[in-house]
Image (tube, rainbow, N blue to C red):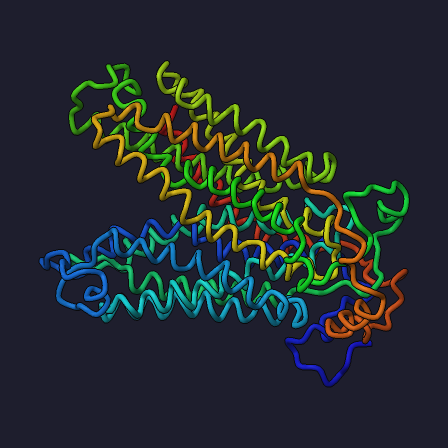
Amino acid sequence: MADSQAGILSRARIVAGPNFNRWLVPPAALAIHLCIGMAYGFSVFWLPMSKLVAGAPVCHAGFVAELTANNCNWSVADVTHIFETFIAMLGISAAIWGRWVEHAGPRWSGFIAAVCWGGGLILGGYGVMIHQLWVVFLGCGFIGGIGLGLGYITPVHTLIKWFPDRRGMATGFAIMGFGGGAMIGSPLAVWLMAHSAQPGISGVAMTLILMGGIYFLAMTIGAFSFRVAPAGWLPNGWTPPAAVSGNSMITGRHVHVSQAWKTPQFWLIWGVLCLNVTAGIAVLAMASPMFQEMFGGRLLGLDVHATLTATQKAAIVASAAGLVGLISLFNSLGRIFWASLSDLLGRKSTYVVFFVLGMVLYAALPTLGHLGLAMAFVATVCVIITMYGGGFATIPAYLADIFGTQMVGAIHGRLITSWSVAGVVGPLIIAQLREIQLANGVPKNLVYDYTLYIMAFLLFCGLICNLLVRPVNEGNYMTDEQLARERALQHEDLVAEDAVTAARGGFGLNGVLTWLAVGVPFGIGLYIALQKAAALF
């Protein structure tokens, strides 16, 4: 039995009782990931944040001076660095505190994530209100980024322990929320900014404060809804694969996080994720301008170089916005689709599909642009984005297969530093190559050709990394004594429930209401994304 003196947030207090049903855990994870997924939708704030001081010019004193200036408007280029800051902090915080997340449990870490993400947005809103950019960076970028990192890895270990038979699907559910968070958050932010705006001034400050409060509440509810599986718990009728098939790519043992990052397998999988994300995020970041520049007037039945009227330009922009809506949708749904499929194909084989199919599709995009096949281009981008999202969702299960489940959350935390690297490198490559080619006189409809071929080559490098992944050497596994010590730190030694009868409760009305609580907002976001996508057709 859990220690009755343990704090309300401790792992020891949230071991599941006999009537708990494991299908109540994914909604708790989704509640957190749908909130932190607004990170993908932060671009709705950039333009309004550049128009906060009515009638004032844009600051020209340099970025450092702009941090404290209050008599000029911030430039769009400078406020977009907030995104880079919180993505960098996501990876850094997950790497630093990943082991603590394992020991503290999902309620503790989920609550701290709620405080940091929700509180960071509130502080950022206050920074907008007093027009101090450094406060916005501190709140949304630094503190909010810590919340992103902790929130992102919080559910991983718990879900994998509850769903050893469906590791990919379980983590896919949670990480699908991160991909879909912007579908809900972006329209909400636009609506709140419109309703809290004052004459000549956008409502960014109040919107950030209100959304921070909403996210804090939703994430806290999610954190308090977590329950951890009793030690030794297994689904009814399920036997670990290693015991029946000898599948060498799925271990039944465990590698400590301090040892895992020293193995070649860790760095090969780090490269797998980094290269997949670099290629995908490059397209994600530039999808709208790429679509407009590659097709231009051809979207309206005109020549690609035709001079367009304001109305025609607006129609093309609307079509590009439709593509962005589709990307949000496929980014989210691709996570659950590919992660679930990886339970059947195996994680290594799934990444082979990502890289081989990805190389073909990236190399095909320039040709589709040259031929003016806009719908084929859109379909290809959507498939690419499913594999971008699927790469995120499949990686926790891949790590659990290779390194075991005991410290997979901490290992995952260190591995997603690859995301921080890719989040900077991918957009930088595609943006810089675009500028270089424009400066050299390359027509706008051709400036992405070489870039997309380079992305295909990066995927080839990722394929090589993936093919080189092998089971870890015997000497890297924890001894029985080390494993017992780690389980004690995670309070698994305090559990007295019978693993055979524990957590076998029915789904019931509670399960229906819990899933509706996350499903309804996701459905609304899905509907809005489809509405935007309709402009393409």
